[in-house]
Length: 313
Ligand SMILES: C[S@@+](CC[C@H](N)C(=O)[O-])C[C@H]1O[C@@H](n2cnc3c(N)ncnc32)[C@H](O)[C@@H]1O
View (tube, rainbow, N blue to C red):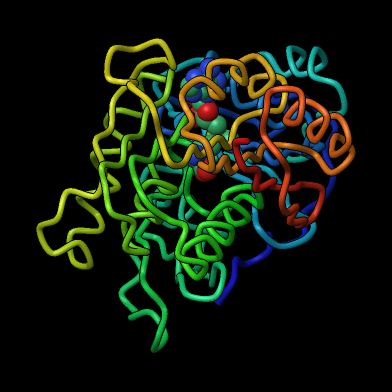
């Protein structure tokens, strides 16, 4: 259970272009992975940088020291690690290379199943073991789009959705904004939220990721289509209020930009679950929500992050 921690490795401040050192010798057949130290606040910027550099996968481990791993395929040049200097606080700690046959094992390292909230059991798609009695399995493909349940903010939102369900307040129409894989929309469906449930993301990679999430969870869905997923924005024609609930696990700065439109789209008495907010930003977030006509009702904390449940006046 839980995620395995990385084996202790020697600290190496060297960028991975030191071809004289056998640790960094790259042949065409070798994959590369980096272990990075990444402050939570820098994670989004780093992920964008890694996407632009052609990383094949990246993830943060759930357990301390919460190392961040990035993977690069053999067929492309490794990015210049000096580019990391533009992201405050990020340091490259270890560079490893490994052959094709180790790829699967390496990319699965650090991923296990784990409980979320009172009733969910998030497990990677290669995990054969059944969920513990009484927990609903949610199958994820770690390392692709954000939304594997491995991040505190996703877990906090899933927990708030459970609480809304227990209070009889989880009902559609529901809109998951910045859905990633669509894990929050799927969670709402699995909790019995009467639809329609929509989920969208601006990132084109999230279209296939949403489809994949539904396919991976076919067992528990039993033919049901849990949500309508699409790539778009809050201005897309598919987005038509009023909604009884909005989910927005994005960065606070993006939430602040979208809040006026979110308020227009939410029915009176409808809820907003907002996360992607650092605990240090709690006051700023609550002030922004109130300013947009959302009354904060509950704040959940995990690690450096919070999620807020707010109600539209
Ligand atoms: C932190 S991830 C959350 C993913 C998933 N909802 C979860 O809870 O795990 C934030 C997502 O918001 C998306 N995003 C960022 N800005 C956005 C915007 N203006 N509109 C829609 N999606 C946005 C990103 O592409 C990213 O997939």
